Length: 76
Image 1 (tube, rainbow, N blue to C red):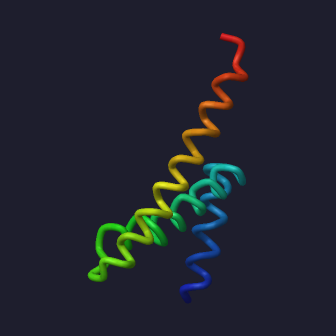
Image 2 (image 1 turned 60 degrees about the vertical axis):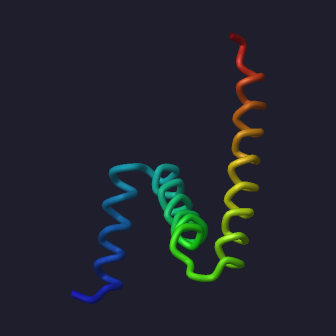
Image 3 (image 1 turned 90 degrees about the vertical axis):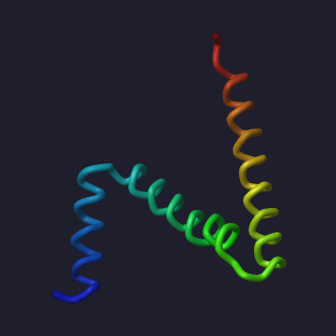
């Protein structure tokens, strides 16, 4: 069994378990975590840590604004 077969089988199982939206959300979360959060914590270079921290702050701020806007749309 090759790595591509394992990834294909895992993807099919994830879609069956989580659905397509859940799988997409999981993949996006993992990409953001690997691409932004880990460099923020583990990079030896301060400029990489600062850049990753700024990116993470920007994304979290946008997520907060979106959540606040959605909350204001709710009737209660």
